[in-house]
Image (tube, rainbow, N blue to C red; front, side, top):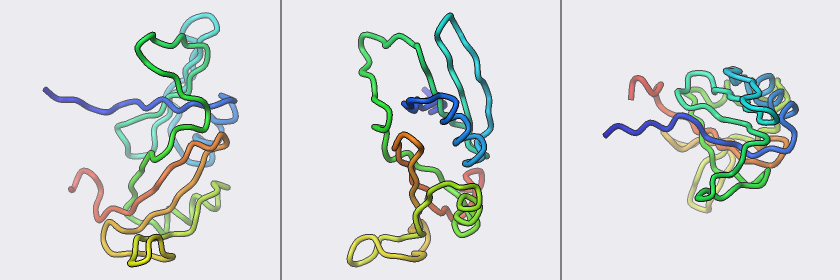
Length: 143
């Protein structure tokens, strides 16, 4: 059996503000912005180079077996880049509130680049959903 992670719902309060943040500031590709039924809107965006998208939704009925997330409660989504310094600079220039580049050291989180797989930066969307960006040694297609 093959299972692929393809869409992660991100809970937000303002669909248009979040669409602008992810598309314009973060550079995600806008795949879909549609009212799928009266009062039910889905915005799907994909990070550049990713096969997994995020979905912003409003008006969708919750499935009885699935809990709902409040805006700002999704944490730990992780993206990877091959040049974290370049990505940091680009995101800062686009107005994304990204942290400094950090690594895990002997005393916990420390400033600056780490060894392979150990350089990170962090940001939050306008609702407080938090993201981590990690430097990978090569593109996913080469790992």
